[in-house]
Image 1: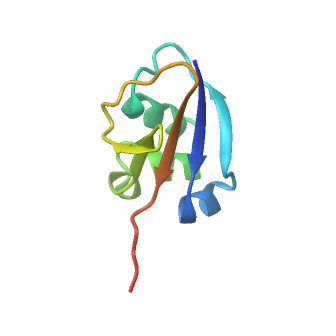
Image 2: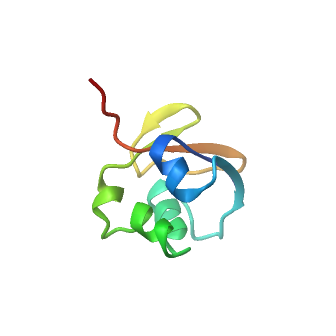
Length: 89
């Protein structure tokens, strides 16, 4: 499955990539699976997406430019964006 993945703010800076076209394996069916698959890249990817990561617990995502939960099903050609927590003042 082809998925456009976008990374924003400090997540983009940490990963060193703004956007990618990924070819996910057949077992990647929803955003939770996508996050686990990205964590398998190791290093900073595991720190940001791994199921045991405190940083991943605060990560938000959007599907087709709409905020969603991790159970959102993926489909061919979809766009998923990941955002770190927003802070301000």
